[in-house]
Amino acid sequence: MSESGVAAGKVHEFTTKSDSDTIAVGRKLAALLAPPQLLLLTGDLGTGKTTLVKGIAQALGAAEPDEVTSPTFTLLHEYEGVREGKPVKLYHLDVYRLEGERQLETLGLDDLLTDDALVLVEWGEKFRSLKKRATGEIVIRSAGGDARKITVTLKEQG
Image (cartoon, rainbow, N blue to C red; front, side):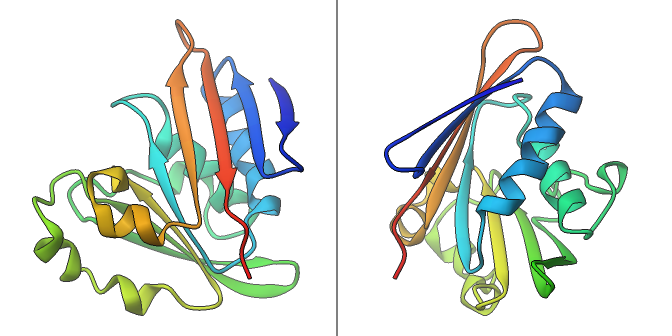
């Protein structure tokens, strides 16, 4: 696993060689993600979006990796954890099956975006409203075999 950071710490790049590497990157990312955050998780099917969330959830004490599954059919999984001694809610959404902004609105995203929330949305790039509201993006690309390149871009907040 390797990491390089550019642009004053706003872009973080990681290369992983296995699922356990990807989970370890997720654990590192949990320290970078100060709530509130709405992050788009972007990548082809099978690139490891949910695997990355496993590490984030584990680092927050919200769930063990084997307890985190893709919310493809349920749309939303909610976990409660702790970050820097404060409660944090981790919401993991998969909007792949949604077919428009109207369906997206029924999820009640505004209710999820509280000051203590990390909202991670798989396939969120499909929706203009999510792209506009996102505070960052995590892009996962296959780098051949089990290798992955993970690029995290966080916007200035304030």
